[in-house]
Amino acid sequence: MVLDKITYLLIYGWLPLDDVLQTLRTCPKDVHVVVTGRRCQLEIVELADTVMEMTKIKHAFNAGVPAQRGIED
Image (cartoon, rainbow, N blue to C red; front, side, top):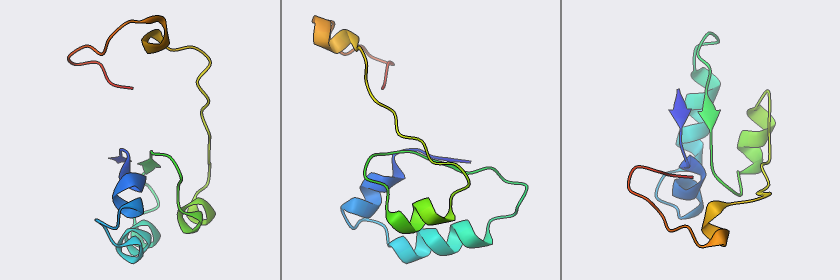
């Protein structure tokens, strides 16, 4: 299950952190959950098995290539 950019919903208060934590705690062990987004809440990090931070090395946008329909970061 991919919770793409869910951290933003939490940061802006559009989704209660307690609800997400409860869902993660009660999720079946055979379900893999991927949470994406910046500034992940410490409580989610503590529950996680793996935490990664990605750093941009090079991006086409910085070379003047505009955003394209159907292409997301």
